[in-house]
Length: 324
Length: 292
Image 1: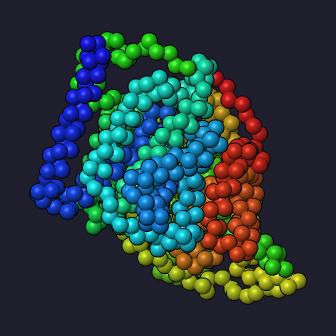
Image 2: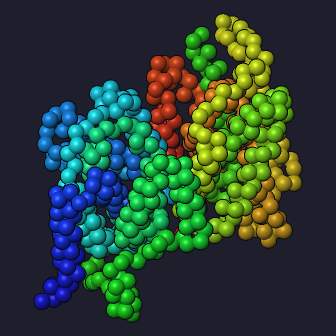
Image 3: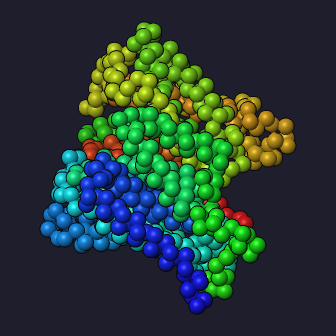
């Protein structure tokens, strides 16, 4: 009975999510949603996955990474190689995309996560650029002209990936490991002194974040027909960064909401790319100047709903577990 | 001979990086901020020089001075509007603001004049090739090198021999103590931004002459590479930025010379990651242990 009480919210959201899935699926098959809306919906979902994965790295673990497009690119190209060059099914492509991006995350994370703050930011930015330049110089993946990819991304795939991403990241955050990551964000030296293996948790968060960025890359590649290294420059990294910053560093629902909102905004401003970037940059500056916590701060939507209950106790989820 | 030729090219390129890197290093030394907008100040300097030459019809030196002046004002304005209110905010907040300012300058520029590139007039500096022991040195690159050297010496003079330079060194050492000693910290920081941005503006004009093609997004890569140069030399250390810039320019030219010109942009970032891993304080820096 106690378990039911604790997990009730979870199951209700799962049921709601599946209801949403079924409605959208019905709308797509019945043709009520035209191709334009379906496109926007897919981009929304891909952006939410990206935002959630970066949220884990920046918002939860406090590691400022601005090379996220690099992992996105690794995933996109890895999946495209699997499906286009090796003729393997899409499922393999998606999985390989995640694993490849995770390996890239480990390769870059293990050495550079010893760095802090600004240095880490620049190192990850450099990594993102290196990925782009490497892709530009490999003829096997088409160099600058890129690869053509068959359209394979469908709504069930997008929905499944989105759901898994959100569940894994939300549960990770609420687990022992997630609390260890949060303690690193709050004060790395103190966390270290409390016996938390900071390097291990930083690398773990980085690897999981890159994994999901890779998944997003696979979905993107098989939705967009063509992938080119220029799609994955640091402007893309900044796009992802602004989702997380605007939503509130440390809030998964904030990142999700801002990813959805900004996708809609950028769809409307598609024909005016300069205006879009000017608005984005002004949003970044003004959010930092006047509301540095972003839309949601560190709060989640769910905690807003049960605000009364948690206000007194502080942390609501079991402080019985120890962090090792 | 081929090697020496590449070395000469590399030093010309490196002096541009060094000029930009100086601004990064000075600003970082004084407010611990990676001024992402620095590369875009460099771009603005390049365009100011271009318009001064094509519209006002002035020569190289007036264009250089005008670009430096405009960039100095721009740098100070950026600092006052965007960075000053965040002096006590978290590092990440300031870094994000800097990224925002950088994007804003780039896209306002594109919005105002379009993204198409411009070609710098090639007649700005006398063009003659000097042959020295079989190595061809263009008079342009000598000019570039000379100008950068003069600016760097001027900077050394300002930092070490003037009152404002003394204030800058004091603030970068300990801002609180400097304030207690009666130094106007805000003005000193503004002055640092002005000087750093002026150097970036000069680098912009020199870059335009050297590469002839300029566009609103040209500041991104040289800006990032100049940052790499600053880290390479030890960020916050002025001679380090000069040496780091020259070294990076030479390495890039050698990589191009070996036939890997497409990988040239990647080399800078590989150097960055290697230096951050093996010697994060840079070539000239001392390792400082973090205290709680």
